[in-house]
Image 1: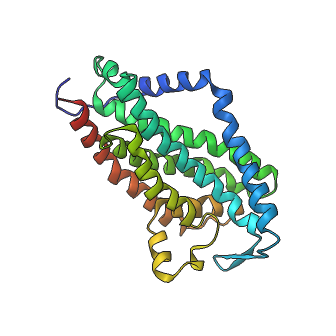
Image 2: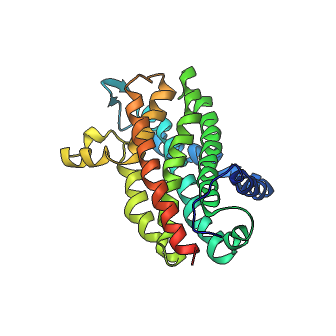
Image 3: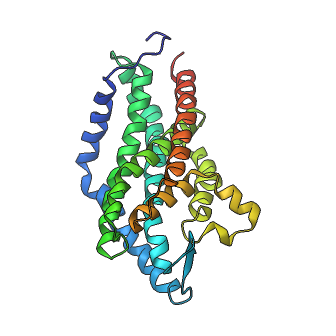
Length: 261
């Protein structure tokens, strides 16, 4: 392979390869997005709904379960994309030597890495659609705007997929993924307006939470499910697009250093 960047439609061959592998164990892959929201809704909905009467979001009073149920879709999209392009991509690269085999074909490194990120975003969309069905079935996504969860999950998946791939490019061993998981992804999951409004945090913490991509993804999924999408929502989408555009070149540069010698 040469050192010149090249990108064509061949990247879909890599995406299709991942899809074929996914379909072999589709039942196992479908179960977590279906059962996870039920467990969370039962645990937090039944537990906290009796303790927290209302939650204020964008000046509107919401029931606690009504507030956090749509944000579970955002959190799942984050986990799906990041785990796919971190742990799973590392396994394909280091243990299965899939990348070495792909690089022996006419595929360029750019096509392989972009396909991996797009596949991670696809996993986010699949999980988001499954969770949306559960959330809507329970009455927490009453608006037709909830259909916007699909492109929102795709955009969020691209952002977190690029972040995961950038992490893979600098991770020496699979055990070291515990560091970004526990220092970055888990704090985002807990403090990005998923379970409670960021207004409940100290001012400095609220400003920090607003810089996290999951905050903007959760704001979008909540607004979509509740029918509150406005032109201001484009700002949240722009932040997610910015994270994708920032981490994509980092992913490509980092994986080139790692794979092309």
